[in-house]
Amino acid sequence: MRISGREYNEIRKIEVIPDYLGHAEGSCLISFGNTKVLCAVTLEDRVPIFLKGTGKGWITAEYALLPRSTNVRTDRESVKGKQSGRTHEIQRLIGRSLRASLSLDDLGERQIKVDCDVIQADGGTRTASVCGACIALGLAIKRMKFKRNPLKNLVAGVSCGIVAGSPMIDLDFIEDSNAEIDANFVFTDTGDLVELQATGENGVFNDKQLSEMLSLARDGVKKIFDIQKEILLGGN
Image (cartoon, rainbow, N blue to C red; front, side, top):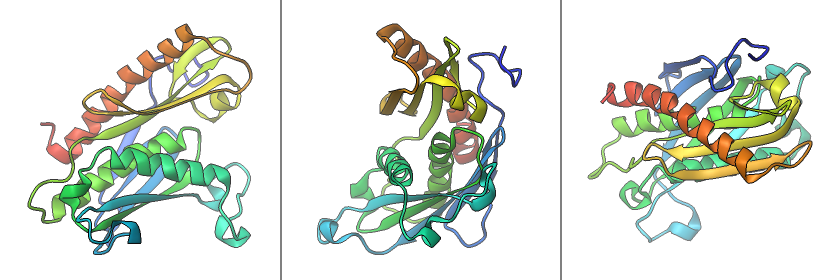
């Protein structure tokens, strides 16, 4: 039993408020326990220069921690004048994950920007951002008129780790801070992996431990996909 009272294979309580913002084409506030992320989608009738004339669209993401989302105030990166390497890494992760969910051909020469703002952080912010961004994207696409629906898959992510020698899923901040091994997995709802990040934070790991974390993640995202489908497809 973990400090939170959860079992090793139990993800935190997930809550989603769809259409949280009035102006965005699609949005939601998603919570994994005490981690809360606001996700918003904007559609633009233009594409980056490298895609002009190709008939293909693009999707990109921005990620930020709000100043008091953490225990100690975090300065805005806009004030610092540059983004951290961590922010760049997470933005690329979210963007790659969402591009795996879309047909860029069916999107046409349009660009979708997804903003993920962490308003409260307690571990797992990048995977919560992926899950919420997919919901916001799905809500936005339902309102847009396409000849063919560009959303081909749902995507969801979850963190796992080895803490005190034991594999567990959906780490909160305390668990993440003390993990020997930290991993993040992103899947499509068809069961394929989009992203796998695994790091020996305070030790090394073997094939068996990686397999255990992968199995935990694969089972855990099923609940997330059920929630996404309930919101976007009415459970179908």
